[in-house]
Length: 140
Image 1: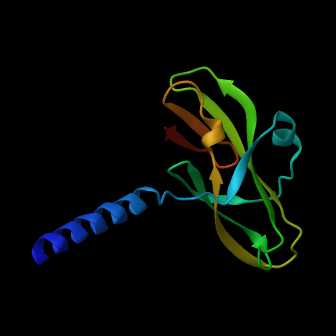
Image 2 (image 1 turned 90 degrees about the horizontal axis):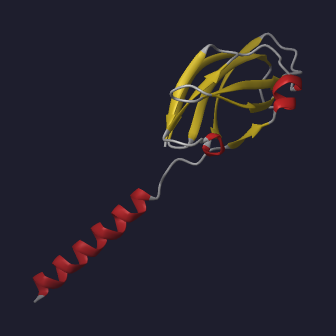
């Protein structure tokens, strides 16, 4: 009887721990803005985009710029609000940086942006990050 209880407790523990693992999807730090106006008018201080990858519904961007610490940077990921009809459909994005730091250091940061609002009809959309010439396929 004792072995049966151990077996039941072990099974319950595994069941609940696997449920917790399934809900541990990455959470994005920031929202993606969809705005044709902001796409054109948002700040465009020099920024180098190092890597772009998708983790779940997050677009993770590693980028670099000159500055002191990067703590005062204002960063936005902006969608142009237009969807190009192709297979798969495409959307244009721009990483906007407002950088008023006047230092000679070169700072790198990684930020994640929720891209779930960029989904279109179908199962995927090509995301073109215009100020980096990077393009990634977002499948959902």
